[in-house]
Amino acid sequence: MTRLLPFLMLASLWLLSCQPAEDASWAAFKKCGSNACVQEALAVKAAFVKNPKGLLKDFLSTYEAGEDHLIGWLYLLRDSVLTNPQAGAYEERIGWRDEVLNAAQPYANDPKLGEIARVIVQELESIAFADELEDAPLFIENLVFTGTYALDKGNAGNGELSVSEQDGNTLRFRLLAVGPAPAHNQGEMTGTAKLVSANEARFTTTEFGGECALLFRWSSEGVEVVTEKGDPAACGLGAGVVPDGAYGRKSYNDPFLSAADAKKAGLLQGEWVSADDPKAAIRIAEGRLFQLYDGQEVEPPVRCLYFPKCPADCLPVATTPCLKVIGQDEVCYTVVKADGKTLEISLIGGTGKTNRYTRKK
Image (cartoon, rainbow, N blue to C red):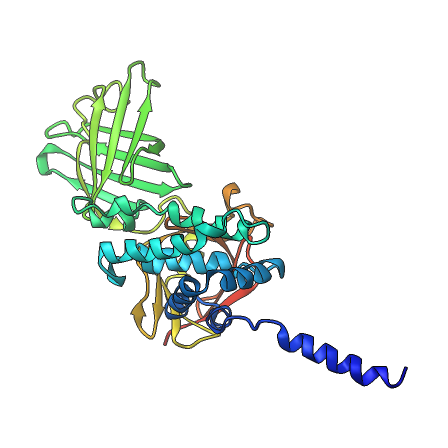
């Protein structure tokens, strides 16, 4: 028996030495663990195109260990590279996407690697490159609906519009309108408008005896209100009160928050430096979340909403304050701590890790 022990130990070491090592680019990406890891993500892309089977095995091992780095890589590749005009020309980014697709598709039916390969294929095939047609407004992706807007038509009337985005397609609003001189009749409308496109929402009602339909159309300057159906009476407004016109933005703040909740939301505003990497930072401002690395934006900003209690579509584990970040996907973060000096947030449905930041001095 004693003579067998050295042999068994040597055999074990030999077997371990024969195990393929994890790809260095994949190991570096996992270690980076930040939304700023664009260069690491590109290195994984290059390695995957060169050796798809080897990387698929690494992806599978990571997935079986209960880690979500594959999804993180795909999202970062999509949002910061493939759909980011600053990363390269339209045709060039299409080519990068196709390289990854061509590398993954042959393994889609593989008995062991097929599930991972299909995840990659499905995610990349769903990218809406058509949104980048030359005649598509570039501002639409960064539109923020929440805020307060004002209309001033002089003697012809004025108004104020308050909007709060409730979920992915619903806007709560309050519209105060004043009619022309000399009467200056007034009217108020409240309700919920449904988004019907990337920059338009519609409100309809028959509450006042007739059919009323308002269209809200956002631009980089503010929002235009158009009465599509009905007169002032059908819309519940005073005689001669027409709310139509271009409303300029006054504020990005949620006008429907209580004073206490508005104060809490204000503590989140500003630039925050990661406790894990002093070069990585986020900025929350003007209804958007910005990702920064070494002082530079690393991807386009996305809408960022504060909720005193997480809405149901965030699938919260508790009724805690949260941030909903809306880009091509919606993700939610519970606000663990926000005292004006430190910020701690945790991704709902993620690994449970708390991301810690300190306010930039």
